[in-house]
Image (cartoon, rainbow, N blue to C red; front, side, top):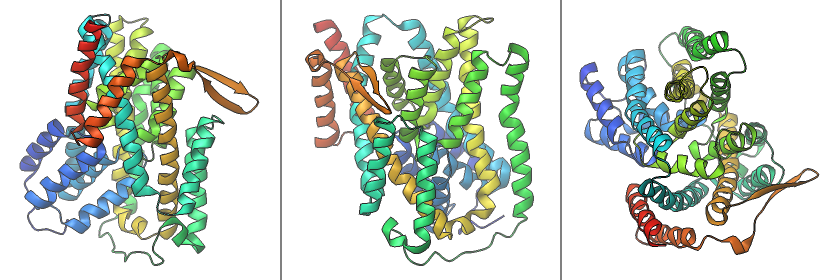
Length: 440
Protein backbone atom coordinates (compact mmCIF):
# COMPACT_ATOMS: atom_id res chain seq x y z
CA UNK A 1 0.00 0.00 0.00
CA UNK A 2 1.12 3.52 -0.73
CA UNK A 3 0.67 6.51 1.57
CA UNK A 4 -2.07 9.11 1.48
CA UNK A 5 0.31 11.84 2.61
CA UNK A 6 -1.62 12.36 5.86
CA UNK A 7 -1.68 10.50 9.18
CA UNK A 8 -5.38 11.12 9.89
CA UNK A 9 -6.51 7.77 8.48
CA UNK A 10 -10.15 7.02 9.46
CA UNK A 11 -11.63 3.72 10.53
CA UNK A 12 -13.41 1.77 7.79
CA UNK A 13 -16.78 2.42 9.45
CA UNK A 14 -16.19 6.17 9.54
CA UNK A 15 -15.08 6.22 5.93
CA UNK A 16 -18.11 4.09 4.92
CA UNK A 17 -20.51 6.68 6.32
CA UNK A 18 -18.69 9.54 4.60
CA UNK A 19 -18.77 7.70 1.24
CA UNK A 20 -22.49 7.10 1.72
CA UNK A 21 -23.01 10.81 2.38
CA UNK A 22 -20.99 11.73 -0.72
CA UNK A 23 -23.04 9.30 -2.81
CA UNK A 24 -26.28 10.96 -1.72
CA UNK A 25 -25.23 14.58 -2.35
CA UNK A 26 -22.87 14.36 -5.35
CA UNK A 27 -24.92 16.43 -7.77
CA UNK A 28 -23.39 18.67 -10.41
CA UNK A 29 -21.54 16.41 -12.81
CA UNK A 30 -17.83 15.49 -12.68
CA UNK A 31 -16.53 18.99 -11.99
CA UNK A 32 -18.85 19.56 -9.06
CA UNK A 33 -18.30 16.05 -7.70
CA UNK A 34 -14.52 16.36 -7.81
CA UNK A 35 -14.67 19.75 -6.11
CA UNK A 36 -16.95 18.34 -3.39
CA UNK A 37 -14.65 15.38 -2.74
CA UNK A 38 -11.67 17.74 -2.53
CA UNK A 39 -13.47 19.85 0.05
CA UNK A 40 -14.52 16.87 2.18
CA UNK A 41 -11.50 14.57 1.85
CA UNK A 42 -8.64 17.11 1.67
CA UNK A 43 -9.87 20.26 3.41
CA UNK A 44 -12.29 18.96 6.06
CA UNK A 45 -11.32 15.38 6.89
CA UNK A 46 -7.65 15.68 5.87
CA UNK A 47 -7.61 11.98 4.94
CA UNK A 48 -5.49 12.65 1.86
CA UNK A 49 -3.17 15.55 1.06
CA UNK A 50 -3.34 17.81 -1.97
CA UNK A 51 -0.52 16.20 -4.04
CA UNK A 52 -1.92 12.69 -3.60
CA UNK A 53 -5.44 13.88 -4.49
CA UNK A 54 -4.14 15.50 -7.69
CA UNK A 55 -2.10 12.40 -8.52
CA UNK A 56 -5.23 10.28 -8.18
CA UNK A 57 -7.22 12.71 -10.32
CA UNK A 58 -4.57 12.67 -13.06
CA UNK A 59 -4.63 8.88 -13.06
CA UNK A 60 -8.43 8.79 -13.26
CA UNK A 61 -8.35 11.18 -16.23
CA UNK A 62 -6.04 8.77 -18.07
CA UNK A 63 -8.58 5.96 -17.88
CA UNK A 64 -11.79 5.20 -19.75
CA UNK A 65 -14.83 5.56 -17.55
CA UNK A 66 -16.36 8.14 -15.18
CA UNK A 67 -13.43 9.96 -13.65
CA UNK A 68 -15.21 11.09 -10.46
CA UNK A 69 -16.25 7.51 -9.65
CA UNK A 70 -12.71 6.30 -10.30
CA UNK A 71 -11.27 9.06 -8.14
CA UNK A 72 -13.52 8.00 -5.24
CA UNK A 73 -12.54 4.36 -5.79
CA UNK A 74 -8.85 5.22 -5.82
CA UNK A 75 -9.00 7.27 -2.62
CA UNK A 76 -10.98 4.50 -0.95
CA UNK A 77 -8.27 2.03 -2.03
CA UNK A 78 -5.57 4.29 -0.61
CA UNK A 79 -7.34 4.39 2.75
CA UNK A 80 -8.47 0.78 3.21
CA UNK A 81 -7.29 -1.33 0.31
CA UNK A 82 -9.68 -3.26 -1.93
CA UNK A 83 -12.60 -3.18 0.52
CA UNK A 84 -12.19 0.58 0.84
CA UNK A 85 -12.13 1.03 -2.93
CA UNK A 86 -15.21 -1.15 -3.36
CA UNK A 87 -17.10 0.73 -0.63
CA UNK A 88 -16.19 4.14 -2.06
CA UNK A 89 -16.96 3.22 -5.68
CA UNK A 90 -20.22 1.41 -4.99
CA UNK A 91 -21.58 4.03 -2.60
CA UNK A 92 -20.64 6.80 -5.03
CA UNK A 93 -22.90 5.21 -7.65
CA UNK A 94 -25.67 3.36 -5.81
CA UNK A 95 -27.89 6.22 -4.50
CA UNK A 96 -27.98 7.87 -7.93
CA UNK A 97 -28.68 4.51 -9.59
CA UNK A 98 -31.77 4.01 -7.40
CA UNK A 99 -33.00 7.53 -8.21
CA UNK A 100 -32.40 6.99 -11.94
CA UNK A 101 -34.30 3.70 -11.78
CA UNK A 102 -37.27 5.47 -10.18
CA UNK A 103 -37.15 8.14 -12.90
CA UNK A 104 -36.97 5.45 -15.58
CA UNK A 105 -40.11 3.81 -14.18
CA UNK A 106 -41.88 7.17 -14.03
CA UNK A 107 -40.84 7.90 -17.61
CA UNK A 108 -41.99 4.52 -18.93
CA UNK A 109 -45.38 4.54 -17.20
CA UNK A 110 -46.06 8.27 -16.92
CA UNK A 111 -45.68 9.44 -20.49
CA UNK A 112 -48.59 11.36 -22.02
CA UNK A 113 -49.40 12.91 -18.65
CA UNK A 114 -49.48 16.69 -19.05
CA UNK A 115 -47.23 17.73 -16.14
CA UNK A 116 -44.60 15.09 -16.91
CA UNK A 117 -44.48 15.90 -20.63
CA UNK A 118 -44.30 19.61 -19.80
CA UNK A 119 -41.44 19.12 -17.35
CA UNK A 120 -39.52 17.05 -19.90
CA UNK A 121 -40.08 19.75 -22.51
CA UNK A 122 -38.52 22.35 -20.22
CA UNK A 123 -35.67 20.06 -19.19
CA UNK A 124 -34.72 19.61 -22.88
CA UNK A 125 -33.94 23.32 -23.07
CA UNK A 126 -31.85 23.10 -19.90
CA UNK A 127 -29.92 20.12 -21.29
CA UNK A 128 -29.04 22.06 -24.43
CA UNK A 129 -27.51 24.85 -22.36
CA UNK A 130 -25.76 22.43 -19.99
CA UNK A 131 -24.03 20.67 -22.88
CA UNK A 132 -22.85 23.97 -24.40
CA UNK A 133 -21.61 25.04 -20.97
CA UNK A 134 -19.63 21.80 -20.70
CA UNK A 135 -18.20 22.43 -24.17
CA UNK A 136 -16.95 25.88 -23.14
CA UNK A 137 -15.57 24.69 -19.80
CA UNK A 138 -13.70 21.70 -21.22
CA UNK A 139 -12.51 23.65 -24.25
CA UNK A 140 -10.90 26.32 -22.09
CA UNK A 141 -9.08 23.68 -20.07
CA UNK A 142 -8.03 21.40 -22.93
CA UNK A 143 -7.15 23.57 -25.93
CA UNK A 144 -3.80 24.98 -24.80
CA UNK A 145 -2.17 25.23 -28.22
CA UNK A 146 -3.03 25.66 -31.90
CA UNK A 147 -2.27 21.98 -32.52
CA UNK A 148 -4.81 20.95 -29.90
CA UNK A 149 -7.39 23.27 -31.48
CA UNK A 150 -6.69 21.60 -34.83
CA UNK A 151 -7.16 18.15 -33.30
CA UNK A 152 -10.51 19.26 -31.86
CA UNK A 153 -11.59 20.58 -35.28
CA UNK A 154 -10.55 17.36 -37.01
CA UNK A 155 -12.46 15.31 -34.46
CA UNK A 156 -15.61 17.38 -35.06
CA UNK A 157 -15.31 17.04 -38.84
CA UNK A 158 -14.66 13.33 -38.52
CA UNK A 159 -17.67 12.50 -36.35
CA UNK A 160 -20.16 15.09 -37.65
CA UNK A 161 -19.53 15.07 -41.41
CA UNK A 162 -17.85 11.67 -41.94
CA UNK A 163 -19.67 9.63 -39.25
CA UNK A 164 -16.31 8.37 -37.99
CA UNK A 165 -16.70 5.98 -35.04
CA UNK A 166 -15.89 7.49 -31.66
CA UNK A 167 -13.40 4.72 -30.75
CA UNK A 168 -11.48 5.40 -33.96
CA UNK A 169 -11.26 9.10 -33.11
CA UNK A 170 -9.96 8.30 -29.61
CA UNK A 171 -7.34 5.88 -30.94
CA UNK A 172 -6.16 8.27 -33.67
CA UNK A 173 -5.87 11.17 -31.22
CA UNK A 174 -4.02 9.03 -28.68
CA UNK A 175 -1.49 7.84 -31.27
CA UNK A 176 -0.91 11.39 -32.53
CA UNK A 177 -0.36 12.72 -29.00
CA UNK A 178 1.89 9.79 -28.08
CA UNK A 179 4.16 10.37 -31.10
CA UNK A 180 4.27 14.18 -30.91
CA UNK A 181 5.03 14.19 -27.18
CA UNK A 182 8.32 12.40 -27.81
CA UNK A 183 9.94 15.33 -29.63
CA UNK A 184 7.64 18.37 -29.27
CA UNK A 185 5.72 18.17 -25.99
CA UNK A 186 5.29 21.95 -26.09
CA UNK A 187 2.90 21.56 -29.04
CA UNK A 188 0.59 19.66 -26.69
CA UNK A 189 0.95 22.13 -23.82
CA UNK A 190 3.21 19.77 -21.85
CA UNK A 191 6.29 20.56 -19.84
CA UNK A 192 9.58 19.44 -21.34
CA UNK A 193 10.54 17.41 -18.24
CA UNK A 194 8.31 14.75 -16.68
CA UNK A 195 7.34 14.74 -13.01
CA UNK A 196 9.44 12.99 -10.42
CA UNK A 197 8.37 9.41 -9.82
CA UNK A 198 7.96 7.55 -6.55
CA UNK A 199 7.74 3.78 -6.21
CA UNK A 200 4.81 1.72 -4.97
CA UNK A 201 5.92 -0.48 -2.06
CA UNK A 202 3.68 -3.49 -2.69
CA UNK A 203 3.67 -6.27 -5.27
CA UNK A 204 2.05 -4.29 -8.06
CA UNK A 205 2.21 -7.06 -10.68
CA UNK A 206 0.42 -9.47 -8.36
CA UNK A 207 -2.34 -6.94 -7.70
CA UNK A 208 -2.58 -6.20 -11.42
CA UNK A 209 -2.97 -9.90 -12.27
CA UNK A 210 -5.49 -10.69 -9.54
CA UNK A 211 -7.57 -7.58 -10.21
CA UNK A 212 -7.55 -8.15 -13.98
CA UNK A 213 -8.58 -11.81 -13.86
CA UNK A 214 -11.21 -11.37 -11.14
CA UNK A 215 -12.50 -8.15 -12.67
CA UNK A 216 -12.92 -9.62 -16.16
CA UNK A 217 -14.79 -12.65 -14.81
CA UNK A 218 -17.11 -10.51 -12.67
CA UNK A 219 -17.63 -8.05 -15.55
CA UNK A 220 -18.65 -10.58 -18.21
CA UNK A 221 -20.41 -13.24 -16.10
CA UNK A 222 -23.92 -11.66 -16.32
CA UNK A 223 -23.57 -11.10 -20.08
CA UNK A 224 -22.46 -14.69 -20.62
CA UNK A 225 -25.34 -15.94 -18.47
CA UNK A 226 -27.85 -13.94 -20.52
CA UNK A 227 -26.39 -15.34 -23.74
CA UNK A 228 -26.66 -18.95 -22.49
CA UNK A 229 -30.19 -18.61 -21.08
CA UNK A 230 -31.77 -16.24 -23.65
CA UNK A 231 -29.66 -16.76 -26.76
CA UNK A 232 -26.88 -14.64 -28.28
CA UNK A 233 -29.27 -12.28 -30.10
CA UNK A 234 -31.51 -11.31 -27.19
CA UNK A 235 -31.73 -7.59 -26.40
CA UNK A 236 -30.19 -8.12 -22.94
CA UNK A 237 -27.09 -9.64 -24.55
CA UNK A 238 -26.95 -6.73 -27.00
CA UNK A 239 -27.21 -4.32 -24.05
CA UNK A 240 -24.43 -6.08 -22.15
CA UNK A 241 -22.07 -6.17 -25.11
CA UNK A 242 -22.78 -2.62 -26.25
CA UNK A 243 -22.33 -0.97 -22.87
CA UNK A 244 -19.28 -3.10 -22.14
CA UNK A 245 -17.75 -1.76 -25.33
CA UNK A 246 -18.79 1.74 -24.28
CA UNK A 247 -16.99 1.27 -20.95
CA UNK A 248 -13.72 0.73 -22.80
CA UNK A 249 -13.90 3.88 -24.95
CA UNK A 250 -15.36 6.44 -22.53
CA UNK A 251 -12.31 8.70 -22.46
CA UNK A 252 -13.04 12.33 -21.68
CA UNK A 253 -16.06 11.92 -19.47
CA UNK A 254 -19.76 11.36 -20.04
CA UNK A 255 -20.36 14.28 -22.42
CA UNK A 256 -17.76 12.91 -24.82
CA UNK A 257 -19.23 9.43 -25.04
CA UNK A 258 -22.84 10.63 -25.24
CA UNK A 259 -22.42 11.52 -28.91
CA UNK A 260 -21.23 8.01 -29.74
CA UNK A 261 -23.90 6.44 -27.53
CA UNK A 262 -26.68 8.56 -29.02
CA UNK A 263 -25.57 7.68 -32.54
CA UNK A 264 -25.59 3.96 -31.79
CA UNK A 265 -28.66 3.84 -29.56
CA UNK A 266 -30.85 5.95 -31.86
CA UNK A 267 -29.56 5.21 -35.35
CA UNK A 268 -28.05 1.71 -35.14
CA UNK A 269 -29.99 -0.19 -32.46
CA UNK A 270 -33.23 1.81 -32.59
CA UNK A 271 -33.75 1.50 -28.85
CA UNK A 272 -34.77 5.16 -28.42
CA UNK A 273 -35.66 8.23 -30.44
CA UNK A 274 -33.48 11.34 -30.51
CA UNK A 275 -35.88 13.37 -28.31
CA UNK A 276 -35.91 10.52 -25.78
CA UNK A 277 -32.12 10.60 -25.74
CA UNK A 278 -32.28 14.28 -24.79
CA UNK A 279 -34.82 13.40 -22.08
CA UNK A 280 -32.39 10.76 -20.77
CA UNK A 281 -29.59 13.27 -20.32
CA UNK A 282 -31.95 15.73 -18.66
CA UNK A 283 -33.04 13.14 -16.12
CA UNK A 284 -29.44 12.11 -15.46
CA UNK A 285 -28.55 15.74 -14.73
CA UNK A 286 -31.18 15.82 -11.96
CA UNK A 287 -29.81 12.85 -10.01
CA UNK A 288 -26.84 12.41 -7.70
CA UNK A 289 -24.07 10.19 -8.98
CA UNK A 290 -22.11 10.03 -12.24
CA UNK A 291 -23.70 11.54 -15.33
CA UNK A 292 -22.94 8.29 -17.15
CA UNK A 293 -25.90 6.82 -15.22
CA UNK A 294 -27.79 7.96 -18.31
CA UNK A 295 -26.79 4.55 -19.69
CA UNK A 296 -29.02 2.90 -17.08
CA UNK A 297 -32.03 4.78 -18.42
CA UNK A 298 -31.21 3.61 -21.96
CA UNK A 299 -30.78 0.00 -20.83
CA UNK A 300 -34.10 0.11 -18.97
CA UNK A 301 -36.09 1.41 -21.95
CA UNK A 302 -34.38 -0.90 -24.45
CA UNK A 303 -35.25 -4.01 -22.41
CA UNK A 304 -38.69 -2.64 -21.44
CA UNK A 305 -39.64 -2.38 -25.11
CA UNK A 306 -38.32 -5.82 -26.14
CA UNK A 307 -39.37 -7.65 -23.01
CA UNK A 308 -40.02 -11.25 -24.10
CA UNK A 309 -39.89 -13.70 -22.39
CA UNK A 310 -40.27 -11.37 -19.37
CA UNK A 311 -42.89 -8.78 -18.53
CA UNK A 312 -41.87 -5.23 -19.54
CA UNK A 313 -41.27 -4.27 -15.89
CA UNK A 314 -39.04 -7.28 -15.14
CA UNK A 315 -37.14 -6.87 -18.41
CA UNK A 316 -36.61 -3.18 -17.74
CA UNK A 317 -35.29 -3.84 -14.25
CA UNK A 318 -32.88 -6.49 -15.56
CA UNK A 319 -31.78 -4.21 -18.38
CA UNK A 320 -31.12 -1.35 -15.97
CA UNK A 321 -29.17 -3.58 -13.57
CA UNK A 322 -27.12 -5.16 -16.36
CA UNK A 323 -26.28 -1.78 -17.89
CA UNK A 324 -25.16 -0.36 -14.56
CA UNK A 325 -23.08 -3.49 -13.90
CA UNK A 326 -21.14 -3.45 -17.17
CA UNK A 327 -20.69 0.34 -17.00
CA UNK A 328 -19.15 0.56 -13.53
CA UNK A 329 -17.44 -2.79 -12.94
CA UNK A 330 -14.83 -2.00 -15.65
CA UNK A 331 -14.32 1.50 -14.23
CA UNK A 332 -13.39 0.01 -10.87
CA UNK A 333 -11.34 -2.74 -12.52
CA UNK A 334 -9.04 -0.16 -14.13
CA UNK A 335 -8.38 1.36 -10.70
CA UNK A 336 -7.61 -1.86 -8.86
CA UNK A 337 -5.40 -3.12 -11.69
CA UNK A 338 -3.60 0.14 -12.39
CA UNK A 339 -3.44 2.06 -9.12
CA UNK A 340 -0.04 0.58 -8.10
CA UNK A 341 1.44 2.00 -11.33
CA UNK A 342 0.02 5.50 -10.84
CA UNK A 343 3.33 7.28 -10.36
CA UNK A 344 4.94 5.57 -13.33
CA UNK A 345 2.02 6.53 -15.54
CA UNK A 346 2.02 10.06 -14.24
CA UNK A 347 5.71 10.45 -15.06
CA UNK A 348 5.42 9.14 -18.61
CA UNK A 349 5.51 12.07 -21.01
CA UNK A 350 4.20 10.09 -23.98
CA UNK A 351 1.14 8.91 -22.07
CA UNK A 352 0.55 12.50 -20.95
CA UNK A 353 0.73 13.52 -24.61
CA UNK A 354 -1.81 10.85 -25.56
CA UNK A 355 -4.16 12.09 -22.85
CA UNK A 356 -3.79 15.74 -23.95
CA UNK A 357 -4.61 14.80 -27.54
CA UNK A 358 -7.60 12.66 -26.48
CA UNK A 359 -8.95 15.52 -24.37
CA UNK A 360 -8.65 17.90 -27.33
CA UNK A 361 -10.47 15.45 -29.59
CA UNK A 362 -13.17 15.15 -26.94
CA UNK A 363 -13.89 18.87 -27.34
CA UNK A 364 -14.69 18.26 -31.00
CA UNK A 365 -16.89 15.31 -30.07
CA UNK A 366 -18.80 17.39 -27.51
CA UNK A 367 -19.30 20.11 -30.13
CA UNK A 368 -20.87 17.44 -32.33
CA UNK A 369 -23.14 16.45 -29.44
CA UNK A 370 -24.08 20.09 -28.86
CA UNK A 371 -25.09 20.62 -32.49
CA UNK A 372 -26.95 17.30 -32.58
CA UNK A 373 -28.93 18.19 -29.46
CA UNK A 374 -29.65 21.72 -30.68
CA UNK A 375 -31.09 20.50 -33.97
CA UNK A 376 -33.37 17.93 -32.34
CA UNK A 377 -34.54 20.23 -29.53
CA UNK A 378 -35.20 23.28 -31.71
CA UNK A 379 -36.38 21.83 -35.03
CA UNK A 380 -38.18 18.58 -34.20
CA UNK A 381 -37.85 16.52 -37.40
CA UNK A 382 -34.22 16.15 -38.46
CA UNK A 383 -33.22 13.82 -41.30
CA UNK A 384 -29.80 12.28 -41.76
CA UNK A 385 -28.55 12.59 -45.36
CA UNK A 386 -25.52 11.10 -47.12
CA UNK A 387 -23.54 11.95 -50.24
CA UNK A 388 -20.66 9.58 -50.74
CA UNK A 389 -18.59 9.61 -47.54
CA UNK A 390 -20.23 12.83 -46.31
CA UNK A 391 -23.05 12.88 -43.78
CA UNK A 392 -25.17 15.85 -42.72
CA UNK A 393 -28.51 16.61 -41.03
CA UNK A 394 -31.31 18.19 -43.02
CA UNK A 395 -34.00 20.28 -41.31
CA UNK A 396 -36.53 22.95 -42.21
CA UNK A 397 -35.56 26.34 -40.66
CA UNK A 398 -39.23 27.33 -40.79
CA UNK A 399 -40.00 24.47 -38.39
CA UNK A 400 -38.25 26.22 -35.50
CA UNK A 401 -40.03 25.46 -32.24
CA UNK A 402 -40.33 28.99 -30.85
CA UNK A 403 -41.39 27.77 -27.39
CA UNK A 404 -38.31 25.54 -27.14
CA UNK A 405 -36.11 28.38 -28.39
CA UNK A 406 -37.49 30.81 -25.80
CA UNK A 407 -36.95 28.26 -23.02
CA UNK A 408 -33.38 27.60 -24.24
CA UNK A 409 -32.59 31.32 -24.19
CA UNK A 410 -34.06 31.57 -20.69
CA UNK A 411 -31.91 28.65 -19.53
CA UNK A 412 -28.83 30.28 -21.08
CA UNK A 413 -29.52 33.53 -19.23
CA UNK A 414 -29.89 31.67 -15.93
CA UNK A 415 -26.66 29.71 -16.48
CA UNK A 416 -24.37 32.30 -18.07
CA UNK A 417 -25.69 35.64 -16.87
CA UNK A 418 -26.87 34.81 -13.36
CA UNK A 419 -24.60 31.77 -12.80
CA UNK A 420 -27.34 29.64 -11.28
CA UNK A 421 -26.47 26.06 -10.34
CA UNK A 422 -27.25 23.14 -12.59
CA UNK A 423 -30.04 21.85 -10.35
CA UNK A 424 -31.61 25.31 -10.10
CA UNK A 425 -31.62 25.69 -13.89
CA UNK A 426 -33.22 22.27 -14.37
CA UNK A 427 -35.92 22.85 -11.75
CA UNK A 428 -36.82 26.29 -13.12
CA UNK A 429 -36.94 25.02 -16.69
CA UNK A 430 -39.09 22.02 -15.71
CA UNK A 431 -41.59 24.37 -14.05
CA UNK A 432 -41.57 26.69 -17.06
CA UNK A 433 -42.09 23.68 -19.31
CA UNK A 434 -45.20 22.72 -17.36
CA UNK A 435 -46.51 26.29 -17.62
CA UNK A 436 -45.82 26.26 -21.37
CA UNK A 437 -47.65 22.95 -21.75
CA UNK A 438 -50.83 24.39 -20.27
CA UNK A 439 -50.56 27.90 -21.74
CA UNK A 440 -50.16 27.20 -25.44
